[in-house]
Image 1 (tube, rainbow, N blue to C red):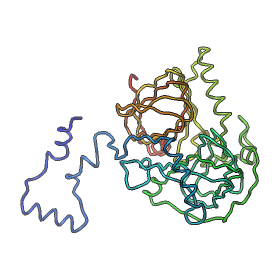
Image 2 (cartoon, rainbow, N blue to C red; image 1 turned 135 degrees about the vertical axis):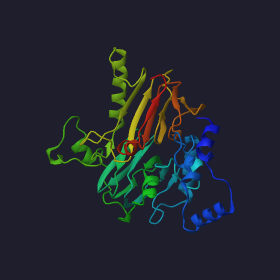
Image 3 (cartoon, rainbow, N blue to C red; image 1 turned 180 degrees about the vertical axis):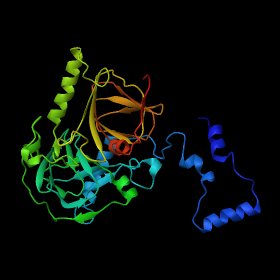
Image 4 (cartoon, helix red, strand yellow; image 1 turned 60 degrees about the vertical axis):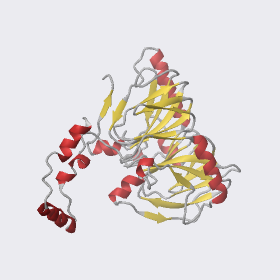
Length: 365
């Protein structure tokens, strides 16, 4: 739609400016009223008009800042976490990566402990490099290692402890902006430490729920969020590798030619791991390019490995390991792989789908 057409929709029927009209508008203001006819184009755009903008954060810039914070900023009661939010320039002054999603780099120094707390907001952690930290979720220590997705669903007590002599950094993803806008947030302090300093290779939740195709009879009740708190890299990697091998054998196993992808799911329902956040992993063969697509809702990617680029709204951004980028609602985007290109993705798709706002357009289909 042209700018002129949009202008006619918004302002084409405006009444003539008169003293009586100004008095009417002053009466509206005095009673905290705003007439629709002055705001139609803003309230009901012809297509989504996000305030958030496409943006890339470089891991090579983020990590040194997190390391500097590690020497200057303590972890403990009050600040709770050494987490640095990625603030979308279009949503300033809030530390929101999108209108519904929050993303941060979190840093824990050698032998440090982040105390336990819980909150209504759903959260996850994804590890692009490093090991040595355990996140303790409702008393269950969960190992954090490269390529792992770790869940902390809403209202679960959780803290972190670093068992090694080296620091570790990872990304956190939460639905903080959505819960803040909806005024549904609760927060509660827990133990000053963590409830279990054990360092098992596999958490109790994994021992129950990480057996393919098998559901414990003690867990027949469906849960809103996944009871499996850790999705291990070896399983993700194997699934993606097999999709591409099947493609080589002539089987229709990939999303698009040369593009393998998986979605992390709640084993009790087969749905998303949490009610407000969808998590996926994508692998592109060297030289693969995805079609340009638009989607309602917000999405965030982190490059796990390889080199490539994302094209957002016609601008190409080259990407390397650890880099993060956000795609606002209805902004066209496509991926290009220079080498094998592995990316972790999370989005607000469960919200959009449950509220029936979801819409996708893929060029050429």
